[in-house]
Length: 530
Ligand code: ADP
Ligand code: ZN
Image 1 (cartoon, rainbow, N blue to C red):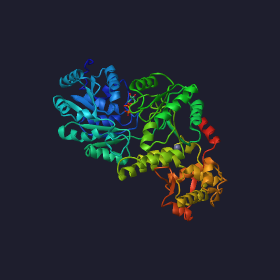
Image 2 (cartoon, helix red, strand yellow):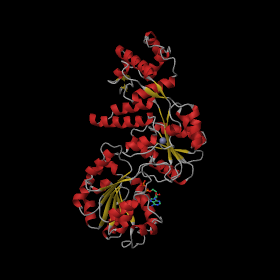
Image 3 (cartoon, rainbow, N blue to C red):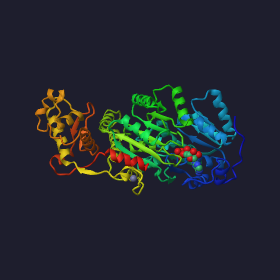
Image 4 (cartoon, helix red, strand yellow):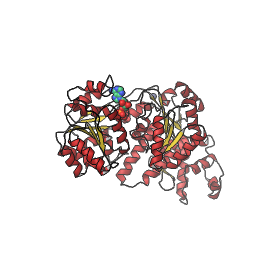
């Protein structure tokens, strides 16, 4: 079952890099990390997706005596990882719930006999006393904790089993530990160090910049058509990922693309395991397949030539956005990260947060995540600078994002903001019924819809005061007010409500500069630059 042994324990890291993995040079950061861990030091590694984290523990595991134990939440991918290593002549295996009892005994025996270079374990395994006893019976070269952000209770991938990993240090104080993640703000970073008891670990932080990815965020008007245009004009025949929030929109969009001649396959947790695996395999192996998915898709997927990642719904956090868009362009070639977002996204995500389980502190955090995401969407500065700043890193205006390529114009939206806020104020005073953004916009534009007539809203002083802007411009105004906390949306019905900050606008104490919705011309310019 195991591949022939390689005797590597006397070689140095660069020899292993060449002989086993067939690469000539280390990538940025790899050598320092590997040498530190080989020497027995603890490490906390932050490297963007595709940066080459795996080698940072695989090489030390080969160079050091004993077996490198890798804790990974990606059970579905363990088999692939192990197969890939075996193909290189590395003695690797895994223990997870997919193995039957006899298979597990074989793996355990191989480990005890010192015949494994790498052993992959699911975190829940490691909590078992039996697993810990087994590990005591062998030689451990290091512990690698992959996707270490899963220990963060406030992050988007929290796994309770990760909390127990803090015990590794107590039971095996002499075994070096290396925790790795692609996702971490300075705050999460600190949380990982504390929760995993890695206070004394050396931190290695690689640049999070992905210069070959062109970031673009555009207002959502007619998402299907916008997506199709993107695929046809810029990414014909390319492999890519389209992210949607719900399972039903995943299916609808996949069908829509198929009907338009694009090989598009759905992927979400509601599909049976067989279909999911088959669709994922086609995406990985065939050229030019577009996968339409919920965020259930992608963790650990290593496909170098994903040319675009398109979001049809707003991600819940900048971390999520960064991680998902990071799946584009791992081969370093030009790629597109495209996001369409609209008023409805803001309303929907606010509702989700207000209605979510957990305490107020949890909701405040989620709300903070959303605010940062919205700030990224509404920024008039370079997207990349803003994105890097979120991860505590500095950058220069990049020339490869939509705001750099077509700097957004701003306009004085103070009066428009006052119109929206006074309409919301009037409606709120009635307290008869709850009204959402669409109704407010109808009133401002002077539309006598059945609902307007039913509630006599054509008699309001604000009725028809907003004929100067189009409906989509009004949606942009409401969206930007929501993004800046000048307007709120209530959980149950998506009703608009004033916030404390609204008063300053109504009293004319502050101005409200707004971002103009980009016109068609801007799009053409972008397409050429890409
Ligand atoms: P991460 O886990 O950080 O997302 P991986 O470890 O999966 O990234 O590496 C991404 C890709 O880069 C893989 O295909 C890997 O083989 C390749 N890679 C890693 N290090 C090097 C290197 N030094 N030279 C060339 N390719 C590398
Ligand atoms: Zn830029």
